[in-house]
Image (tube, rainbow, N blue to C red; front, side):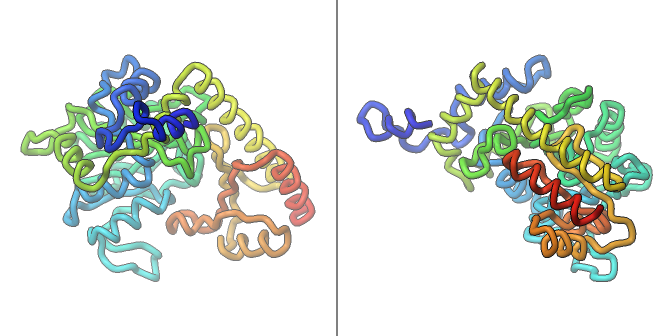
Amino acid sequence: MAERAHALSTVDGYSGYGAEQGEKKLRAAVAATYYADLGIEETDIFVSDGAKCDISRLQVLFGSNAKIAVQDPSYPAYVDSSVIMGQTGLYQEDVQKYGNIEYMRCSPENGFFPDLSSVPRTDIIFFCSPNNPTGAAASREQLTQLVKFAKDNGSIIVYDSAYAMYISDDSPKSIFEIPGAKEVAIETASFSKYAGFTGVRLGWTVVPKELLFSDGHPVAKDFNRIVCTCFNGASNISQAGGLGCLSPEGLKAMSDVVGFYKENTKIIVDTFTSLGFNVYGAKNAPYVWVHFPGRNSWDVFAEILEKAHLVTTPGSGFGPGGEGFVRVSAFGHRENIIEAARRLEQLYK
């Protein structure tokens, strides 16, 4: 990145607007690294300034008449972008849901995978695995069900795989590992949680050429139009960083970072477990989903903040299904994680 930034100050190294879809070398590297043998080509990949930004661009693509389904709880950007697009009804205070959105409950009781037989048809299904905030990763069998469900209903899955590198069992890292997924799914991903690119801003979205609207028109063609209208491409400096990440040295460094955060996760899990709490997630994600039965998430958040001076995230911020939980993040320096564990032990022992 430093070399690319310096090169911009030279006559030979300067580059202006690039391809909106991303630099060819980076698109090819993403395809080869994450989608080898899955039939995804570099032309299916759109490089972006992060998965969150692409979620909103996808919403612009789907338009204000689309109806969405989300996991409950889930990352707030799916619901909030839907509200901003005008896809939803009013907020219903009594159930803490917006009208015209299908909230697919994901709880310890159903293994954090929704009962699809009770989910009505929607145009779009947002699905994040491993999930933020619960940390649950869907199995191959579950994702096969999801793909069949989308096919039967003529729905498009937007599959958020921002935490795929944290998977340590045989759960699929990409929706495209499931046969038939290319006809029903879009996948969005990011360098944020692998390489600490939260402020650098770099991600990608895969729109397979096999994905067609009901009239036979390729979805990728319309997404390309949206991207070229709303976006001038990811920063060329960030893209140089992306190529660095996908070099052999970069892949090892990312793997080391993920491993470090997974060690942090274990410290957090062990702490809460030793205090008698039921904890979920953690195995395939950098998040620990801690259950405080019968308690209000915001009250637990306030208690931990005021008494232990630690910041967690109240579960209800991710949807009504998060009530009674808090999300604890493993992103932090080791000494801070150890100190946090000490304070939690003091608070709840």
